Image (cartoon, rainbow, N blue to C red; front, top):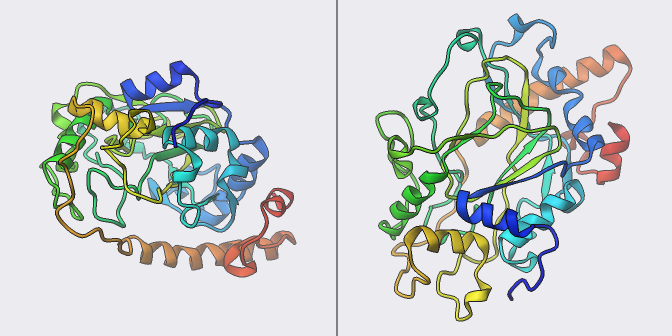
Length: 331
């Protein structure tokens, strides 16, 4: 069913997405949620926020202890997500329906304080989705979503995107209907589908705490170096569609903006003949075991801190899932 009225995305934002593949929703997350999900981050890490010598890891993908339904956590961004994907009825409510405190932390290192690196040389360019076989029409990763939990200045570890690389990914998947589970890497360490060395447009995603950036799922992106060593906290909650993308809709008005971007990159109005040539598959990410181990480590630190301060440990791994109002109240 076509969207007849856009309530969250302006015409300028919609055109920006179709042209550049991303759009920022400012102040999309309430300040109390940002505070609740970041106030104990250094306790969980076991680092001293005032002593950089204790920051032994540069980047950490933390596990989740608390969560809030996405539509409650960031209603403006949720509305924009629905509009980019062609309507809420196309989103699978049984998968990834919440946002949590699984922070992606970039603390930087002394090595990069006085150095500069060109974006294309970051060597970590990829598209998201390590739990399914990628096809041109895959709906498992409907959007790449980045939630900012603190102000991110230039050179302070913001995610880089390569808008002109979307065409490379689209072309790669179009030419590989058999799909790709393990995408080969180029010599620079980036996914071959990104062909990042041919890209000329690079954007560093900066912003303020509570901003949310919605990105096309085929956008090449990379972590950057945190030269300023200002702790950077983001999350990357997925959103999944009920059905694969459809590039041959009877009514062109029914195409989502995500689908239209793919068609625009291929220079066509539809793909009536294209179809996948292998079964769709989902699997457990290789990173799952490491995150499970981190949960136990973080719980021990949280328990020790609670014992020392007379506080409590707020984690779904002890208390079970809690209503979002409880998360805010406890924060």
